Image (cartoon, rainbow, N blue to C red):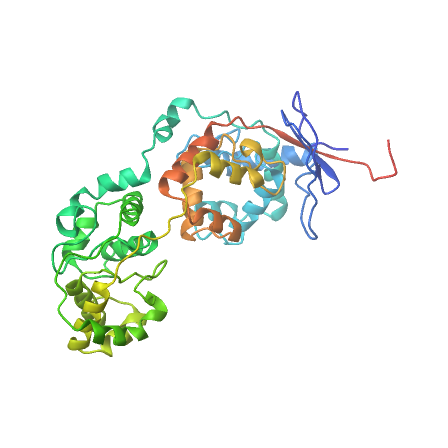
Length: 411
């Protein structure tokens, strides 16, 4: 048999294809079966191929990733000790342009697939980076509660929208009873100019993504109540006209997700918002048609009807702790981020800034993976920061693959 690297001092076994992944300090064996068409050649690279991979890496990769695969550059990942099959696949993805046009794509564009395989085997054979020092992670360990952080970030909003998000000023929207997803989307629309409102754009320009998420969570967690503002118009006539709106906004003005609830909303703001859809200063094809189909009197009636309804605080998912998220991540990436599957990247001792960037890329769709997008889309910036810090602190375990003899032919 031909191991990829010299075995660490202590290790236990786990099978791959019909081979075995051995991890230093592991407590149990895990069988890893290859799927049809999987290329596991990097796992079985010979010492000569690994040596050739070193020469290629020294000339093409070391400037950014370090001479021994341990990066000192912000946002550039460590490659030392990374799982061979995963690393080979990622290099091929860059070469094929699946990661977009960037420095990595340019670096591997003229390397053959065979050269990339040898580079992957070389980096997989190295001792991993040491864990990040604990001092690096102190700030993340004491991250504030998101609702408390949202209350602090929303301090400047109370003079217009009410201290608890219930409006007392005609024309100012109430912010309670809205799903966080809608409030985040609406705030971002003001920030990027999709909703044309110079004052709001200036007020939210200085907010970070985390601030906006926390503010939305703060208002969503407050006790919902009707706006304390006048609502001229015929409520009964508005109720009849609202039948066409119920499919999206709910029979009683209570909706979910990115569609806003209208129950208890300030009437004057409701009319102004509909007029903005009608004149195009708010761009939403789904709303422009309905807004243009009603006249001013009907708008006032609709506003009066919705203002009379009792809003409800949205149902919020229970926030997961860092430990909860780690448990979920470890299911695929191995205990403490030490993957035993050669197709799955190790996270232990990886640079925290790189892990943050990758998780954000999955969350925004800049980097595509059905599984990772589903996991990361519900993460807050604080979750991502703390997860990255957690894995950066973990001790990375070197891994070795050895080929087992066929069953029934023991040696």
